Amino acid sequence: MRKVSRIVLIGFMGVGKSSVAVSLSTLLNCPNIELDEEIVSMSGYNTVADIFANRGEPYFRQLELEAAQKLNQPLQVNQSSILVVSTGGGVVMSKDTMAALLNPESLCVHLTAPISTIQLRLEGDCSRPNYNPVTAAKRLAARIPLYEQYAQITFDTTMGPAEIIAKQLLDAVSDYSLASLDCS
Image (cartoon, rainbow, N blue to C red; front, side, top):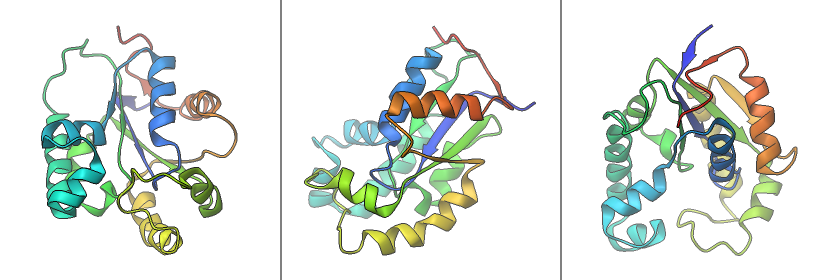
C-alpha cells in the first residue's frame, strides 16, 4: 500500500476540481490549496482573467510553476497530514509545473466530465480567460492524453454533487494509505 500525503486534482476547466477539493478537504479534515488562488495572490491582480488580460498566459504559467514549487516548502501543519491541491485546467501543459506538483507521495486524480456537461457548467462564466465554447472540445481533446499521462486515477464528476463525488473518490482510493484522516 502506497502512502499518500498529497492529492492533486487535475482536469479540464469546469469538471469540478475546486468543488471536489473543498469537499475532500472537509471529509479528510485537512488543508486545501487552490493553485489559481495562490497565483492570484502572488500576482497582485484580482483574478486569473486580470492576469491574462494584463500580463498574458506565459506570465500566468510562470507564476503557476512558482506556486507549485512553493507547495514543496514545509507547511505549518502536522507533517503526517494530507494536502488536497486543486489545479487549473492547463497545468498539465508544463512538465516542470507537474514535476513540482507531484512527489512520490502524491496521488494525481484526473476529474472528467463530457464536453456537453462542461459547457453547461461554464455557460455565462466570464472568469475563465481561456474558455471558448467553440474551441473547448478541441482543447479538451488535446489535453486528455496529458491528463491521462499524469493521473493514477480517472474519476467522472457527473455522478452527483461535489460532496458525493468526494465520498466516492475516497472509496476509490482505498488501496492507498492516506497519511492521516485527521490533519488538524
